[in-house]
Image (cartoon, rainbow, N blue to C red; front, side, top):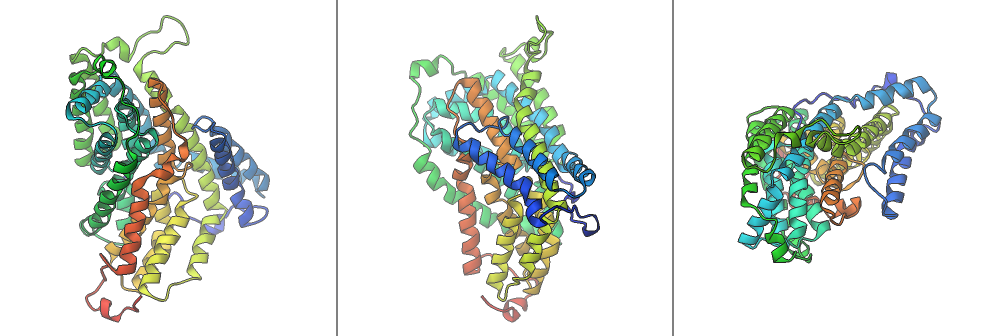
Length: 480
């Protein structure tokens, strides 16, 4: 999620607290309802972003029954729906959805199939290539949602045709998206973590790179072990669809990445990427202008790829808006503030305990919130900074502990925005090519999530990569 604004739309104002019957438990009711329905549908193998709409809707309805002031409750719902960060992401989805359709229409899947056959990149090897591609894209753009939206329509079908394990392929693309969200200097989580800890971006990225890169290297192990096992389509069948011209569509990816690296807004970058993709597809003869937009022969028929691309992300957008509304209720009812207060009562007595408390409090705060940057904004100034300063931890160290923690479990839970978008994009790709669709809980297989946590704990327990605010601090601090 790349958004360079760090305005906190999730701040808790005690004077405007949303009172609920049952106190904190009443404030948790919407979350319990939402999670319960998501788990129920997923266990029944009927999950999907559109199927999950009912969960978000019922969660909001259930919360209203426990609100003492119904009007203020509705206002909180509207504030959640109109969240500034959420609107930026939704807008990016609209253009990323069309971008994915243009990639497919321009023959990028066929181009990747050609590359896979020529290079022998089948099974687990292709999954590894997909991981590297997602890492590079997310590192350049800083957006995990934009990464899965742009790459999933292309990499998922190509990988299945080339013998990749569907579940591991999907989880690996999500893992690559998480890498950039964690490390990219243009990522909102990187910006917020540095901003709240008063650290320089240079120090944050430079000191975080060893953590992120080590986790990525370790993630290669499960990818290579579990990435293959699928069935490679018959060579004559693949040969009939391969076309190296499709690789020219990669130029449009380059446009998006370069513009994002130059500091352009992700929406602008995607718009130019769309324009570039359309031009390339037409020049290579893979698409004519009428495919992009035309007047349908009958009312109700599609007007072309633009409509198809937007409709493909509608399910994810609506569910994400419902989740944002539920998140706002959790904040305004004081649930998140109570979590922070509880954490303050268990203040650590050693450097190691302080760092562990930063990790665990950040993860706990991120679990019920749909976006990870707002979770950092909640805990960064109020908990991470004072605890870290008490033990003289360097600003970049505090920022890195918080950011790595918020980019770990966040990418495994199905009510978080990136996971919603990831599954929506995978569903659309599977439907378009009549391919198998894993459960949304496949996100738990995200290899980068677990290796990042392992690296983070290793760093805390051994002191590797730990830096102090002042030279004398390492001698004067209470040791682990």
